[in-house]
Image 1 (cartoon, rainbow, N blue to C red):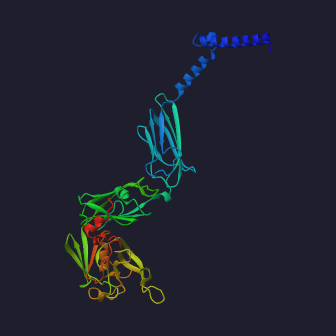
Image 2: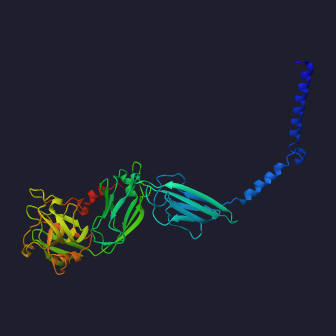
Image 3: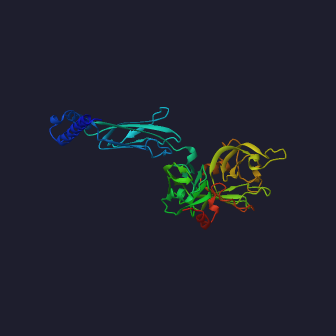
Length: 415
């Protein structure tokens, strides 16, 4: 490069650098002088857009993309600095889910329980005090059956039962975190009796007081299991309260030796009924048994409880046993008997293990012993069977936890 060409290049560079210095020095001065008039109009546009934006803040739970959401209390829409104007919830296939916006228009929730393993979408709109609209949405999936457990309980909500009726909960999956699950269940009575839970197995939890429930009391069961981890990765979904009433105090004492049953209310005998219990070859279990089911007529087949002949058929198959009431899971009933001679009742034990009462075919004669006892008994009444010569029924064979002493019962609690 020649000296003249080099001097020209330096001059150009100097001019450019000088321009930069001048522009930098004037950047805080008059907009017109700097040539930046377009920035003012953009700032005004941004300010106008900000004024049009709603300040209402919508929050939807579960958050978008959630899975394993609760079917009870997860879905909810709330708004701050505004009021809800519209909330729509639907399943993946477009089925609408009913819900209601609160009176103050600050929240919304579905009207009922959601389904498990289902995808839901919530679309919400709100407006602020200036009437400016805000929008929000969320898509989530509820917990699957594989990742949740249910407890099937007895007795039913609103029912009236006998003094021996325990609260029995059978879980559809084995529970390993027993303490957490039991902590989520409370059982109380207006009688003030202490109520304790006992685990018969990982799938069954029963509650009872030390003595029979007090007559005319009310028992309340609260299931707060929503989100409780019952086992690794398996969560509860139930959140509900159940109440039932205890009726009159009726306990019937069956004496297999005298072949009589004394029906007692409040400790007083109101009726004595001749019975026929299990034969010497097929003795009836002893112990305090709770009526768990009632059937005006039912079929009884010996094959279902192990009484078969050489051909494998049931030793008996009676399709219309009248006035039958279940006392055990294994097949012990107290029921009407129309096929036996009337002379056996009160004189000889002939059954395969059940307690029989005189009755007629068709279960329509109200004057029989079987009909009277059926009509004057309710689920939860106690039938205390004595002097059969057999073993005492196991506490978990039916609703028969009364055959366990109180110390042993409390030892089976995880709380």
